[in-house]
Image (cartoon, rainbow, N blue to C red; front, side):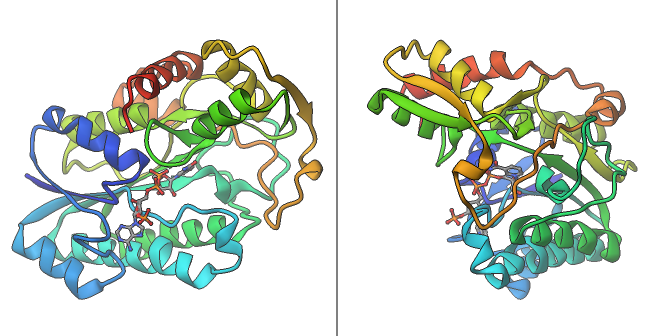
Length: 290
Ligand SMILES: NC(=O)c1ccc[n+]([C@@H]2O[C@H](COP(=O)([O-])OP(=O)(O)OC[C@H]3O[C@@H](n4cnc5c(N)ncnc54)[C@H](OP(=O)(O)O)[C@@H]3O)[C@@H](O)[C@H]2O)c1
């Protein structure tokens, strides 16, 4: 089987590259320079020319704050382009593995881990565009797996871990919000889960939405404290604060812990605790992986 991996220069895409040898199939890794997924004709040409039967879509517009000012741009990538990927997989009888977000739940007052069928309630442009992308796939009706994840970080690109490492080593004090609760997810763990799904159920018959994050629950404050502890940075005092101390156009989910029972039981996954995966990521950063 031939697999197209889009957005391959991003956090998740880079981790998919690292696992290429574990995918027992021929892989085409592309990012916007090689294949701009907002160009429908080019998407169709690429898939038909290379006989692609499975697309793993790691491409997205992921700047949550900027999306507020350019929802149309975000929508072209997170919604229109996703529809094109679904259209082409429908046309060739293939399958789309697509990644979505816990931000589809921004507006709910949840205090229990979110199940896949919890009604979506995004509060910002990013969450709205990602939800429309999910809906586009369902409308097209190609075979698909949609994986919702949250708080993604890695050695690659910009993310909370890399920002905190810089802040913690430059400032004597830093404040981090303790009123947003979720689970950090190492991109390497999500990539591994996707590989397991492909290898166990390549073009299989399982369709639907699945949650994925690492195990455990924390606030961004707890995450920052653990980064400092594992990186042995002692010169910065990390203090908890409320979200309203950092005014933002976007209301972020106050609680978006994902219930992963479905993906674990369906695909037989074992998922590491976020503190264990953080250690792997920090080791990678220390070794200059970027
Ligand atoms: N990051 C998070 O915290 C988070 C949380 C929950 C869910 N997710 C979801 O997880 C998935 C992977 O996220 P990530 O953090 O790995 O994203 P990322 O690092 O931002 O990578 C996305 C990649 O897609 C590329 N891209 C953008 N527009 C494209 C286009 N038109 N055609 C082809 N490629 C395009 C980007 O290129 P440029 O950099 O040049 O734009 C980038 O290389 C996304 O679906 C995201 O929505 C992420």
